[in-house]
Length: 364
Ligand SMILES: *Cc1c(COP(=O)(O)O)cnc(C)c1O
Image (tube, rainbow, N blue to C red; front, side, top):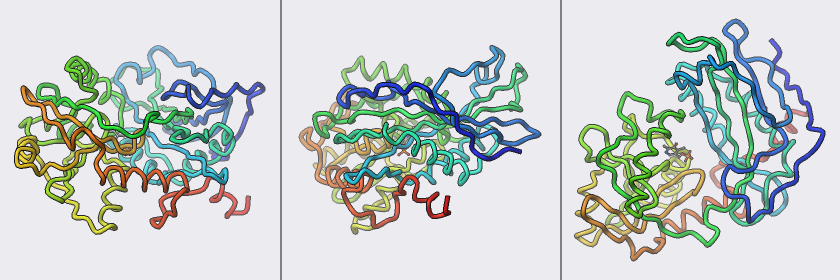
């Protein structure tokens, strides 16, 4: 089966948007990556084409039973105009874990990473260079078989689209308010919470609306069974600094395994901090606040990197954390992770890879 990448270039290139107008996921680059899957062929026909709509039969299974997965990562431009990716191998691994959960055939992680690097290289002019901006990379897979049978599809499409995105903090990193959700559930053990799959996100919108209605910007999710233990905040993992110790919920089977979370744990341990992955209840957080021991709370994810929490609202009680200011640890983590991502700081962990370096090494 054809595995060699074919490229059809766009005839007319788009005008690139102004860096201060980028926002998130509004603009897309000139090209995209596509490959197909059929049971008897495996993944085949990998190609880079001009960015364009895809045509699907109305009976395509993605529309009916939601068989899909996605990933999210970023490419950063360094001061020397090199393009860096941050731990993209981890995204490929996670995509296959999501595939497994959604009964979607596995991808060849190394091969797909090579295709991704080819696409970024072709679109390197689209990686913006102002402070805080990056090129967001969205790989995703959808079930394309024309059939209404309730079972895994026999055909799929894998695509990668690219979107230049603006700074998450145009006015500098600042804390947000969080609403503790005690009715709706994001994910349950044994469910799909550990997979990046579309339905998890549409199922979270009504809680998000409730949080906004309460004047808070995001939702803090509790466990589905007891509504007691903390899981995540919005689409981010969450960390607490209590009495000098850093605590994050242990991966329980309903928490998405963030690559930022993993990196922060590794970095904190390297700095000599105590980091504990364990169950942490919302009562424990409010009790720590009452004792004056709740020092910092922050979310972590690719989009914001670190999102400090300045306010937590749970039922009738609202607490203000660190005087609504970004904590020292959150600030230090943000500066170090973004520094490594953008090549401003040395990368002692070997987390970044240069776009093209891999291919050049192989001599093509
Ligand atoms: C993607 C995601 C995260 C963060 O993962 P990163 O790899 O750090 O970007 C956390 N929670 C949810 C629900 C997510 O979808």
